[in-house]
Length: 360
Image 1 (cartoon, rainbow, N blue to C red):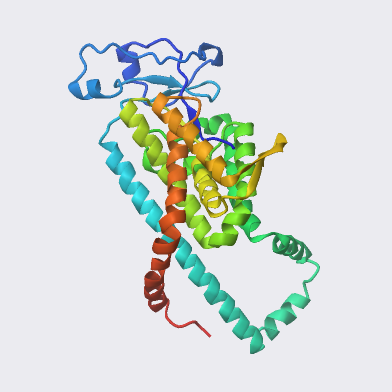
Image 2 (image 1 turned 120 degrees about the horizontal axis):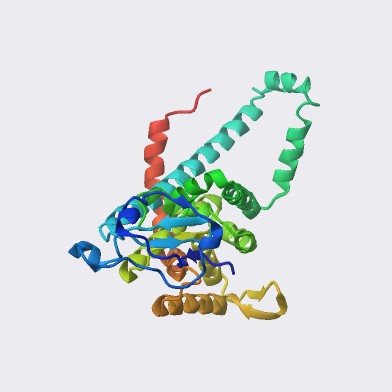
C-alpha cells in the first residue's frame, strides 16, 4: 500500500533573524548544503510575540525531499484551520454537486441520442462522416480501446494521467518553486486552500506514484462497480481534500510544519470502502503473493499502523492524512452512500428546471 508522504526533513544551520525575515519565497540552494538530519533548527525565541510562542516559530526553515529546494515554512497560524475547514466543506459539497450534474447530463445525452437515432435524424451527419473515414480511423481505434476498458478503468485512466502529468512537471527545475507552492500541502504556507486539492495529484518520487497508482487500479474496479463512476469520483475528490485537512489539523496541534503530497489519502478512502463492503475478499502483497489475508483484517491493520504513527509522532509518512481518508471512506460506507448520496435527487429536480426542455 502506497502511503501519503510527509516531507519533513531538517538540517541546515539556523539563519540570522534579518536574513530569515526576507525568505518569503522558495530558495534554490546547493544540494550539498542540505543535509538529511532529522531535527529542525529553530530561531532564538527572544523578542518574539506571545502568538509566535504558542505555536511554531515565526521563521522555521524546513528542507524538503525535493533536491536543492529549501522551504520557508513560517509560522503555523491556528486561525488558518477555519479557512482550511471551510474550503474542505465547500470543495466536498461542490464535488458531489458536480458529479450529480455530470450524471444528469450523461443520462440526458444518452436519452437524446437514442431518440435521434430512432427518428433517423443523423442521416446528414452520417453522409459527411462517410467521406472522411480514413481521417477518423485513429479516432475509431481510440474509441475501440476505450470501450474495451472496464468501468473502473475508465475512471482510473484519467486520474492516472493527471498524476503522471504532475509528476512530469516536478522534473522541470524552473517549475519546482511553483510546484512546491501549489502542489504541496502546507498549513504554514501563504497559499493554503488549493494546494489541499492539487497536492492529491502530486508525486515527486517514482516509487510513490507507481505504488499509489497500482493500488488505485487494483481497487477502482470493485469500488466503481458498487458506487458507479459519479459517486466514486465524488468520494475520491472529497476524500483527498478531507485527508489534507486532517494533515493540517495534526500539524497545527503538534506544531510540526512540513509539506505533504500524494494521492494516498484519497486512495485510503477507496480502500476502506471496498474492504468494508467486501471484508472476506482475500488480498495479498504484490511481492509476497503466497501470503493472503482478508480485506477486513487488512484495513484494520493499516488503520492501526496509521493511528500508532499519529500517537507516536512518526514522520516517515503523513499518517494523519491516511487516517483521515480511511475514516471518510468508512463513513461513506456506513452512512454516506445510503443517506447522503440519495439527497442529490432534490438538486437534480432544480437542475432539470434550470436546464429546461431539450433542444430539438
